[in-house]
Length: 63
Image (tube, rainbow, N blue to C red; front, side):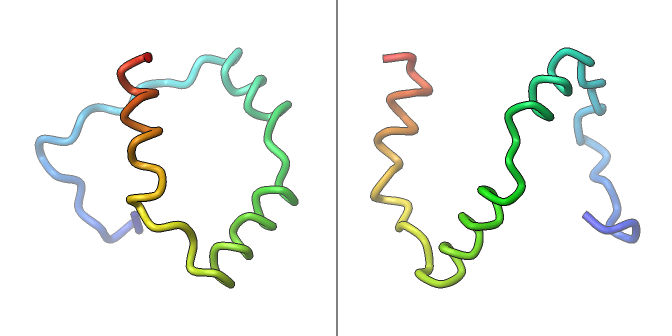
C-alpha cells in the first residue's frame, strides 16, 4: 500500500512482531534466493493456482 492509499475502517489493527520472530526471519531469509525466485516467476509466468491449491488446502487443514 502506498502512503496515499486509505486504510479501510474495518481493517484489523497492526500487531507488533515479536523480536524472536524477527530474529528467526532475518536468519532464514536469503535475499538472493528470493530474487532468483521472483525472476523465475517473471520469466515463466509462475505456476497456475490450480497446480498447488490442493497442497495449500491440505496444509491449512493440518493433514
